Image (cartoon, rainbow, N blue to C red; front, side, top):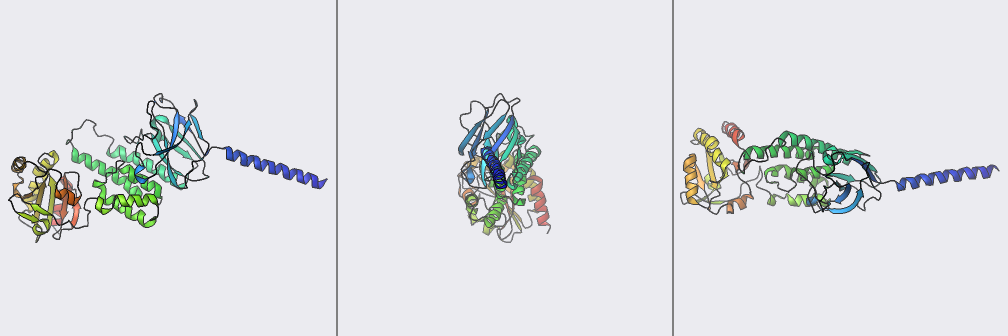
Length: 401
């Protein structure tokens, strides 16, 4: 009798244990609730999209759509089956406006209203999220945090603050050249905050998301030193990770403009006076050389000629300071007029007269102007792309040493 009772109790416990296991196995791996208020323009659907390559991250139309879940009238949704992907891979939650036929469209216009959130997938880790459908990325919260997703939320908050601080007040109707240098500086400061997160975090995938968020279009020309430093860091820590390998290949030195600390390549320049020489020859016995890449049609370049370079030349031109201006010109007449009008005839000028497709831009791996390089007498890059007060302060400090 005692044995029978004991066996009965064991069977009850076993049944209860199996019921719990069954209940757990039936639980969704990802569930959530969306606030649908003011969301009448949005589809009541949530999509799972997988970026398969590093360049796919934060990029529209290229991610692989893995699954979708309908959002109920109460805002709830569930993904029952965990996706068949490895641990510690990025999977993106996405919502779309009505009429959008591509579930993989990702908005990168403003982090306050962008329509997706990247998560770190960990097998067995059940997640629950909440968000406003109209402010999906900005409002999303996660229950069941891993260290990776905790870092992702921290990055999201940092991005929101950096965007508001540096980019949020910019006008949308500016002209091509209006406030160009100011806008470039604001963008650089925004990108630098994201890449500083990459520099300080221990979490690989959020760090790589930060790199992609710094430039979803993959344009790293103005932040070359920052992204190159990240490629060295993560390449040393995770040399076998496929995304790290793709990242380091993307920002290999041969794909970036000449970096600070490197030497300027040997470039033969056709000078304004009809001679041909090289920067190395021109820089002999000089303490500081400013290689200025400009054009007669570039409004910010013209302003900088008059307001910054002329005063610097008047102050240091008789000493060990040299300005070599390379023009992206195709019309010699327009080039001559700009030099004369700006008072830039004081320093040296060169151009292949081939417009913006020329040997110097190719050798320096440049696509954007205004651009400049500050070189020592041996042609080593001391600084680059300094403008206005930053350029004046650098020259003043260096020449006073």
